[in-house]
Image (tube, rainbow, N blue to C red; front, side, top):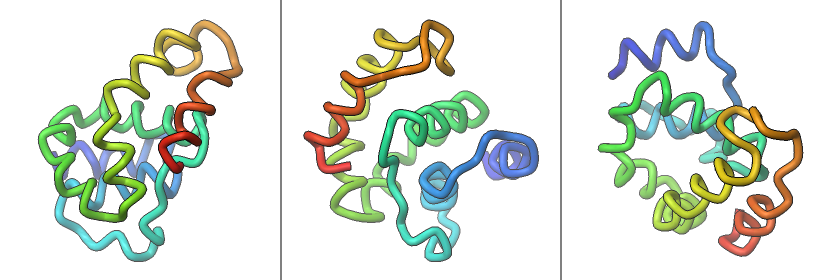
Length: 111
């Protein structure tokens, strides 16, 4: 998993929330990213792209959940947010470029 994460760090679409997710799942310090969580669908998309490159991270969601209360709330409802995002805009924005339903759901969770 760590090699896949390293490859993603070098070549993927990265943001502070996806970096936090990657480091937490790998058991690496993520303090430099401030425990950042996805604030909007664009941030969430970068997390999904990370999961595409390193799907094993899903097995470590408990570690990501431990980063902060917001991460815990999001991880608890991850499947719902992911489904809403994919239904609304498709994987990596393949259907359209605006995700108001996903954004509202994320805000209702506390993101």
